[in-house]
Image (cartoon, rainbow, N blue to C red; front, side, top):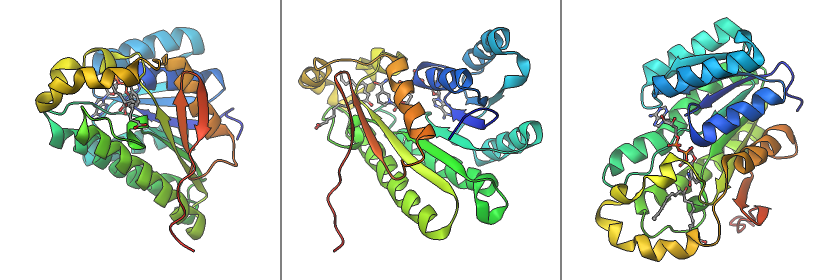
Length: 257
Ligand SMILES: NC(=O)c1ccc[n+]([C@@H]2O[C@H](COP(=O)([O-])OP(=O)(O)OC[C@H]3O[C@@H](n4cnc5c(N)ncnc54)[C@H](O)[C@@H]3O)[C@@H](O)[C@H]2O)c1
Ligand SMILES: CCCCC/C=C\C=C\[C@H](O)C/C=C\C/C=C\CCCC(=O)O
């Protein structure tokens, strides 16, 4: 899929991985709608991007992925401004084992909510143009991160949802591919401000260190992999594992004969 003229929506676009995703999509020719609850970060990124790419290439909208009303309004504005949606990156997420219900609400329910509302505009069966949805999961969606059980559960959920939606879309003719991005630790605010957020599992921080010692990614390395999942039209239902020394499409066990 060539990105020139394509319209992308990125959640959690203001900082960290979402910011890098926004930048790589812009560099490759897409127009990008930045959604974030952090208005300061979103506006300041939009200002910087305006200088580099011109005002017409991006739109920032304050949008909480927990709010159906705000998501609906954001998609409406996107379609009014740019005429449609071709790419959705469900990237907004938090890690907070103290606020575990909110974590599920943002990391898993938020991904489902945003996806279902985006389908109304993207699904070929309802007048959309089709396209691709990439969900930012985590390596913790593939194996247990012992200091973060609820975070682990949400990311396993995101991968399961992505794979099931890919199969549902292919079987129904939505014209939309679904893939999951599964990075190891990435140098962002989420990673660096972690100790207070492990709650009752803070005593396990040291035990997590062995994973961290295997290497921490920078946001550009993650964005490169996102680009591959967006542009390579052979990718559907994939979970791409990203570590400092390897990229690998996960092979899942076959459960049907
Ligand atoms: N940093 C890591 O080590 C790491 C590793 C693997 C996966 N991830 C995943 O990558 C994604 C991005 O994380 P990051 O490390 O860039 O975090 P970050 O904290 O640097 O950025 C997250 C962005 O999401 C926004 N956000 C948070 N809650 C939101 C909500 N309810 N609605 C809209 N926006 C919201 C924040 O305002 C922020 O701009 C998350 O889904 C995270 O789970 C992160
Ligand atoms: C210091 C305590 C934990 C710090 C957690 C901070 C950020 C985490 C972000 C993630 O999305 C998790 C990334 C990678 C998870 C690594 C390993 C999971 C286990 C995989 C396995 O069993 O093979």
